[in-house]
Length: 458
Ligand code: NAD
Ligand code: UGA
Image (cartoon, rainbow, N blue to C red; front, side, top):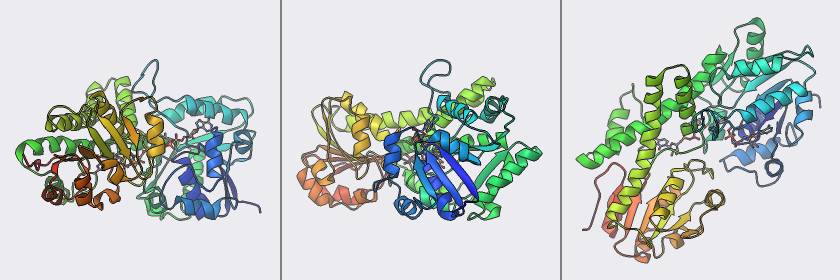
C-alpha cells in the first residue's frame, strides 16, 4: 500500500508510543514508524505485553500495529524515509556540570538532531514533541541547517499535554493541540502540514497555531501552573491541620468559583511524575539565565513546597507513632506517582519510603501495577523492604498503613478485616484523602489525613 505520508517518531516512551498509536489509529492513510535505541523497549512494543500500562492503549496498538504503525530500532532508515519527524526523546534534569540539578539535559535531543542531519537527503519537517527549554528550536535549526547538502529543515514545536493514566482519552479528545513555527512562508506551510494531521480527528478550533517560542514556553508554563495549584492547596493543607479547617472543603469552596475552577486542587502527599519538577526547575534555570531572579525564586518555591509536604508527611507519621518507627512494619498502599499507571518516576512514595527506611522502619510496598518499577528504583536497599501484590497480605501484622497512590481499589478494601489483622493501635495515614476516614475511625483505626484534624482514639 502507498501511504500519503511517512511519519517517524524518535523515542518510543510514554509520549512517543501513545501519541503515535493515536495518529496511526486516526489516520490510516499515513505510515507511522516509532524508533528507539532501546531494543528491549521496541521488542516489548512488538509483543503482547506493551512496555507501558495505560488504559485503552493495548487496544489501540493491536488495531494499528502492522497495518500502519511500526516499531523498530532502525533509526537511520526511518529518518531517510520520513517526511516528518517527531522527536520525543527524554529531556531529564541535568545531573552534571553547568546547570546541574536544574537545567534540561539536552544530550539525547542533540544526538538525535545530528543523526537526522547525517541521514537526510531531502527536506524535512522536524517537530519537537519532547518538552524543551524555550528557544531550543533555534539551536536545532543551527545544527540542522548548517549542512552543505542543500537540505532544508523546518523546526516546529508541538508540545504534548497528555497526562499518564488518561493518555488515550487525552489524545483522542485533547483540550487543545498546539503547533508553533517560525512566522516565515516555509514555517507557516510546515505548521499547516502538522495541523492537517491532527485535523483528522481534532476540531480545528482546538488546534492552536503560534510562533515557535510561544509553543515551547507554553508547555513549561502549563506544567508550572498545574504544579503551582497543587503546591498552593498543599500549603493550605498544613494550615488546615492547625486550624480545624478541612482542606477538601476549602478546595471545593474555592473551586466552585469559575475563575478558579475545581481541577488540580486535590491536596496530597505531593505531586510526582517525571515532568512537573523537572520542567519547573528548567523554567527556574532559564529565568536565572535571563537575570530574572525574582521570577525564578517564585517558581522554585512550588518545588520547595512539594518537597516540604513530603517531609511533613514523614514527620507526621513519626510524631504520631510515638516518635519512633524503628522495627515497625509499615504498609505503603501504592507506589505509582498517580493511579492508573505503573510509572514511578519522582513518585512521592519513593521519598516517603527512603525517609521511613532511614528511621529503620520495615516497609512493605504494594501496588497493582508499579511493583516492577519500585523494585528497580529501590534495588540498592538491602534491608527492611518487602514487595507484596496483595494489599491484605501487605497490611497483615503492620503497625500502620500509608496510602501513597489514589488507586480506586484502596478505597474499596475490607478495612474491618485489615484492622483485625494489624498490630494495635493501628494507624492509617491517608496521603491522598481517598478513604472514608469516619468509617475507619469507627472500626478502630487512628486516622491521619492530609489537611484534616486527626481522628484518634487516645
Ligand atoms: P521516556 O524516557 O519514556 O521515553 C524517551 C525514549 O527516548 C526512551 O525510550 C529512550 O530510549 C529514547 N531515546 C533517547 N535517545 C534516543 C535516540 N538518540 N534515538 C532513539 N531513541 C532515543 O520519556 P517520556 O516520558 O516519553 O518523555 C519524553 C518527552 O516528552 C520528555 O521531554 C517529557 O518531558 C515530555 N512529556 C512527557 C509526558 C509524560 O506523561 N511522560 C507528557 C508530556 C510531555
Ligand atoms: C502532567 C500534566 O497534567 C500533563 O498535562 C503533562 O503533559 C504532563 O505532566 C507532562 O508534561 O509530563 P502527569 O504528570 O502524567 O501529567 O499527571 P498529573 O495528572 O498531572 O499528576 C501529576 C502529579 O500531581 C501526580 O502525582 C498526581 O497525583 C498529583 N496531583 C494531581 C495532585 O496531587 N493533586 C491534584 O489535584 C492533581
